[in-house]
Every structure is written in C-alpha cells, then in structure tokens.
Image (cartoon, rainbow, N blue to C red; front, side, top):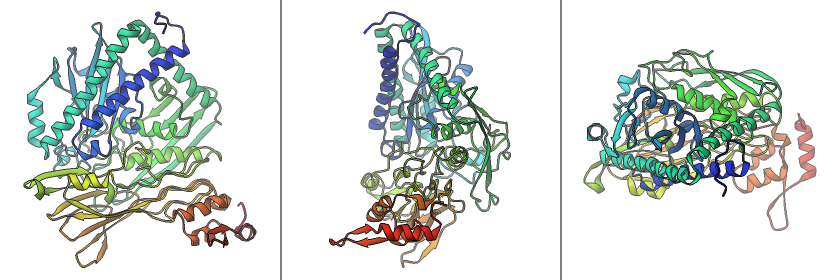
Length: 596
C-alpha cells in the first residue's frame, strides 16, 4: 500500500481508509454489545458509536442509529468549549440535552484521541440507559412538567477519567442515584471500553498510514461525500413544499397534541436542501420537546431516507443541508428547564415521517410513506423486584415488538422496523433473554394480519405482544403515540392501523388503556399491546396480484382485504392452494376504479 503523503484525491486509498474507520466503529459497537449488562443495550442494541474529528466534524458512524450519531459533533464541541485542559487519557460523560446531547437517558462517553500530541479525533460511545435516576422508574417520562420533575441525573460533559483512571466521585454519584447501580456500572465500563478500543485502533491506523496522510484523507472524504450528495440533489426537481403532521393528544397534560410543520426547499441548481422547522409551537410543559441534536438529526434523517443510501452520512454531506431552528421551539432548541425526556422518539418519529412524506408529495417515485411510531407495550419500561435474586430491583426498557415500516416507491415496509428513529438498526429483544433477566412471562408475540397500510407497495405489518409478571408486582410505564393519528400512506396509499394497549385482569376482562399510562401488574394480570402499522405507497389497485397472493399466504393480509381493498380474486388450484383468478381480478378492479 502506498502511504506517501499526498493531498491529491486517491480513490483507492480513500476507500481503504474510509472502510478502516468504519471498521473501527464496528469494533467499538461489538465491544459495547458484548460487554454491556442491561438488556436494552446487550439485547436490543440501543446504542451507537461514532468517530468525530478533533474540530468537531462527524467522520464515521458505520451502523449507528441516526438519532444518536448525527448530533455527535455537537457533544464533542461542548467538550472542547468547556475544557481547555483536555489531555490524553481523559474521558468525559455527557448526557446534557441542553448542550448537544439527545436526551438525558443517553449516556455518551467521549474520549479525545491524540496523535503525536495533537487532538485529532474524538471517539463517541452513546448508550440508552435502563435507568438514569428519574423520579419514576423510566427513562421516558412523557408527563414531566420540566427537568426538575423529570428528576434525572444530568452530566454536562463532565470529566469521568483522567490519565485513564476513573474519577470515583462521579461514579459514586451515579451508583447512589441509579436504581440498578451494578447494571449501570457494567454498561459504563462497556462504553469506556468501546471508546478506548477506538483510541487504540486510530493510533495504530495513523502510525501505519502517517498522520498527514490521514489528515488529507479526512478532507478528501468530506469533499467526496459533499459531491455525491450535491450530484443527487442536482437530479431532483425544484421543491418548495410544506407538510404537516401531529403527535397524538395526551390527557391531561397535552390535550391538543403537538402539531408539526416542515417547510422543505430543494434547490437543484445550488445542490442544497433547506429544512425549516421554525414555524412550530413553543416548547410544551411535558417531556416531548426535541433537543437541538434531535431536531437536527431527525430532520436530516427524513431527507437521507429518500436519497441514495450509499451516500456517506458525514460532515461533508451535511454541508449541503441547512436545518433552520429557533429557540424555545418544540422542534427547535429547547430552553432549560423544559424537559426533553422523550426527545429521541414520539415527536422525533413524527418529524422524520413529515420530512419524507413531504418529498413523497412532490412526485411519484420519490419519498416514503410514514412508518409506524408507537412506543407501546412492547417498548415499555418495566421495573420491580426479582424474587429469584433475593428481591433485587430491576429496570429495563423493552424492545420486543416492531411497528410497521413505511412503504417506498420500490418496496414494501420492513417487518423489523421498530420506530422511525431506529429504522431497523435496533435489534429486537430475545424473548427468552428477557425472561431470564427479569421475572416476567411472555404469552405471545405475533404479526397482525391486515395491519399495514394498503398500497401499490404496502406498509409493514404491526405486531401484537402479551406479557405479565411471574410473581411479584411489575410496574409498566408506557408513553405511546400513534393511537389517534396513524402512520399515513402517500400518493393514494392507505394508513396503517392505529396502536392500542389493553390490560387484562385475572378473570380475563380486558380494558383499553390511555396512550400514556403507569400501571402496576399483579400475578395473573396481562398487558396486551398492538403497535402501529406502516403507511402504504401508491393506490392499492395497482399492486401486483402475485404480491397480494403472497401476502395472504404469509398471513400478512386477509382474503377479505385482498378482495375489498386490492381488488384481487382468488381461485383454487387442484392441490387446493389459492391462486389468482386473473380474469375475475381484472373485472373487479375495473368496477372498483381501475388505476385511479
């Protein structure tokens, strides 16, 4: 390999180094996944790793969740602003949503990486915690009037290690306040380990390729990424469109819900995109406000979802996108002490949907439908005591089910979507591991037939889950959206089904729950949750009948919906298998309106 110092663009060397940095991020991720203790990290993979340059530009994120990593540069900027004595061996704990973090439940470990005495990179390992000391046992506190009622421990980029040794004062603070201190400490060590792995590998890379070569690569990689996105934008039509959406009302603290408006402008000649979020309501007195990091990363995610996925997602590409925010805005720059406990979901999911739906409204073949966005029973936070371990406390964020993914102009929605902010990058919990880790029992987990929005391409189906405690009472906290306003279809596609949660008592009586609730389940009681289906893309009567047949055979669709919505008529083959009756289908579709 030629390692001569050069500022010329070498496509081979650029490709090699880009993949080396992505490989380092993947090694960080594998370290965190394998070493963490909490189920939300080690089971569901609710974490992300990234590498940022020393001057605060996102360089590499590999498979990090967009909601985590697109704002990583804001956190490293806080570190550089607050500390003028950063040195090798330092590490910082940052979960302050008013200074660049997403929300307080995301603990980020930042490690400055020095090469020949120069701070060239920052390794970022961010992980969603099972408990952060909130006033109630959850990391998602939708009803919190402000950060004081939220009650979480907030660390505004605090030094947690000096000369590679942990600062015990900070560790003791966390262990004293967090309900599951040993679990938190295990996750903390896993995050430190992930960041230190990156530090070691980056130093090895720079030693091999030489510091100046790596510096040249960084600029070349950013310039290449910018060119790729500008080229893509130049092929888009001129767009200036407003799209609106709304988060569900939540009684009693949010009776009108949260209207969301996105003004999108695409200027192909300039190769630029503008996403204006300023025309939205002020911050609300609950935990649904977006932090600055989340407002930016979710707006950008909605756009990236609709363009070539091979375009690198880094600071170079970000040069082409302007996200306009204002202070004290529910989808802008949150003002202290407004709570943004739930900034990484709910309104965040709606924001992604609104951006990609705006693009779909411009032309057939562009954009996406809306993805299901319910944080229902299968995503609830469960807590209690475990009789199997002497009454030890437990707290965990479940990731057991999956909303339906949005349909695209080319494909059906994903089954393993989770929520828009995750977009399939989170893992679904292993039911068996959850039952081993916590004293709970799952009765069923299945897809719901006919739950995805119909369309030329259909939305992903919703899931249904049923679970309850094994013996001792279990607290369940649910802050769900998607029970009133569905994930919408686009360009004639239908909406996905609404989410719903139900409580079943010991006698089998079932009661529907409000979208935000905290309940105590006793032995013999069950919680049943249905997620939201994804929206469809294009008219259902344009769907290939062979696809409809497959959907019915896979039990993703029903025979009745196939006929009444898709206009597909089935016959029976000699082996008694269903087949499409093409003549009857053509006749029925003509009666139903053909391709209108």
